[in-house]
Image 1 (cartoon, rainbow, N blue to C red):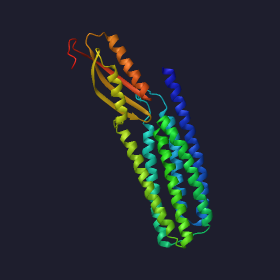
Image 2 (cartoon, rainbow, N blue to C red; image 1 turned 45 degrees about the horizontal axis):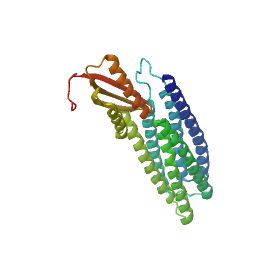
Image 3 (cartoon, one colour; image 1 turned 90 degrees about the vertical axis):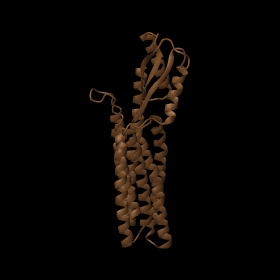
Image 4 (cartoon, one colour; image 1 turned 90 degrees about the horizontal axis):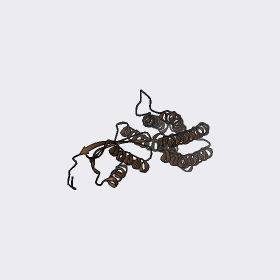
Amino acid sequence: MAGNTAEATARATWAKSVAAWFSIAANVLLIIFKLIAGFLSGSIGIISEALHSSTDLLAAIIALVSVRRAARPADPSHHFGHEKVENISGVIEGLLIWMAAVVIVVEAVRHLVSGEHLDHIGVAIAVMLVSAAVNAGLSVYLYPVARRTESAALKADAAHHLTDVYTSLGVALGLALAQATHKTYFDPILAIGVALLIMWTAWQLVSESTRVLLDETLPESDLVIVRKTVAEHRGELIVGYHKLRSRRAGSRRHIDLHITVDGALTVGEAHEIAEHITADIGENLPNAEILVHIEPAAHERDDGS
């Protein structure tokens, strides 16, 4: 059982690392193309997008480091493992995105006031459409890996790329309107809209990661599975259960509960029941650390106790 768990963890870590490296490479290429198009056209929208991609690159690097760090086993200084590193990276990524959005707003307002000229708009629009397509592909690739491995870091990275799809399309629209109407203010106005969307994404990432760091309980859907699994074991030997507690750390679930068993059971028999419950919960909820505490009940009891 331990060998299978270790093998599954190794496979998940490898999948996370490959996804993070793929995200890093794509972001490097996008930054180069956006900077070239931004300086050629003078578009603050595209330059803002290049800055956004720079924060995405840093976020992808943080994700790579965090998934490797989170995979380290428990040690004398970290008895519960290192999984929360992924959640810490989610907070860092969110703050980076927020700061990039603030810079975008400042630059957009400056360009809105100065009314700077735009050149090579057709090239700039093409670059933004290519960027949207690349980010859509990355998001489609990363989200399933994040769900399968339950990686908070990859989920944050996938969210970045999905946001980039909308922001790239928004910048392309601003440039197209500027070209059609000869009104350059469409470009910075759309850039401000992009920044607001980025801020909303950053807030969601920080909020979700912070809740995990504060040991928020598992979703009700997970707790229903735990309760149903324990209920299936209730009978003549198990009287009931209480003190169900849960939390998450990275992709790892932590669950503990107390079960009340017939007081006539031996220690070995009670332990065997606890082992069965632990195994069944683990089978229904992957990546779970489960602790079942046994408490004796009075030997003589009625069926309603």
